[in-house]
Image 1 (cartoon, one colour):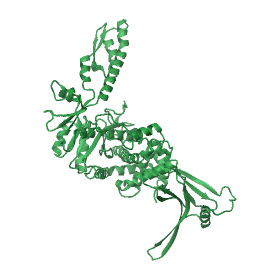
Image 2: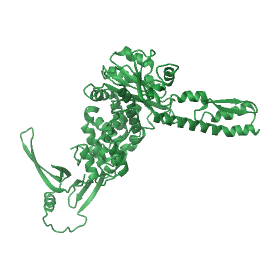
Image 3: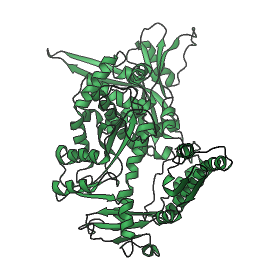
Image 4: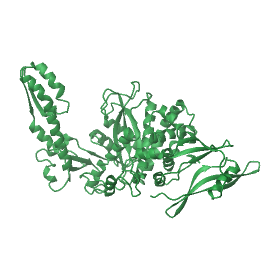
Length: 590
């Protein structure tokens, strides 16, 4: 939107108070305000609190704003800027936290809650270690307005411990807000698992396991994230670094059924998460619990064998088809084939096969030239390279003392290629409640959890690596990041018009087809500027721009009082606050 002309004035607000002795005291607040028009509505913003200034200074400011002529200033240093603090970014995140009821969500009012809330806001606006965060509080208005400028590391850690003890209560409230039937008619929840590495070796949760970050040589933790169908984080569970996916699913299932008291849900998880054993647990737990997951490759091959129910002819005229199999009684199977994915997997496999052959070619040349001999020596060299691209299963390697031959297992490669682009969704939810396309969409919505993991781990919140050693501190750290992700989710949605985020993702009639961006999102990427000529920003870029909205403390000669005054907001900064339906506050706490 275009920058609106503004008018400033001094507002004098009178109030009175009667104390316990019946004495009435009268007060007058003098506020410097800016008036502007938002469409057909006149709005006011408080720029400074002039109450502590002497009367003659306030009168002079008011007269100047009314256009009256004043005597020229005799001293160029009559007004000085005593201090300037970045304000806009923490004010916006704090406003969203209040809008979402986060202070009450965390627990009763008090210093521990203020510290915990500040840690969450800091994780959104300026992620860093706890020590750097404490130092940062003194450099922005967050520390001054919440009274945390003198906070110690012991207090910060105590606040983390306090927050960790309240995790069940916090997550219970979020579950009732986003997973209960009123807010979630589909009664669906998404769950996935990720990992992050630890610095140090003393945390009891640390263990060596499959690193989803590709970080070798480090112990790690795992954490499972539960969200609603749109990806709002609701709960998180921190587990030992070698925990298998099914065990993590069991823990979150116990929380959903026991701690949250949700009696009818459809749990969505990937093929490694919801195994046959977990399905039996769901069936024993409550007949109203459903699930949506996918079959593993061996089960799909079995369905395709000979005259099985899954044949490639099913996809001659359609991308998905519902089938059944006696191996999955009481379940629906929705078979899908994505031709784009099939082509990509075929290309990638061929590239990896060729790359493996390229690594083996110099070894074969050395053997042929007699520079490398002996079956053991040749085998050692082959073993060093053949597994680099995980293609060893597709080669037959014959080694003698004087020869090396490498051949592709073409029949095996062709058999694997038949599965390219094919996946099968399995669910017991009846078609009357969930059609085939809706079942596929629900499973593919796990992308929302994966997006949350990206935001938590690297894009926005910088969860990794974890430096804490105590189990409760690690859990508190991950909980802070989860709650910060909850804030970020809502801020990203609200600020979509100012960023490259797709504001209106098109509905996909065919969920198997590749996802498409809306025409407006394509136009954003093409123009890179909005209708008012402002460049679109990334989410971190927008937060950084908001941080340039500062609060300055003005000091007038002859008076010890300092007057807080905001800089003039840019049109983008004003728009950011308008989009979260909040005025630009002079202070975080009024």
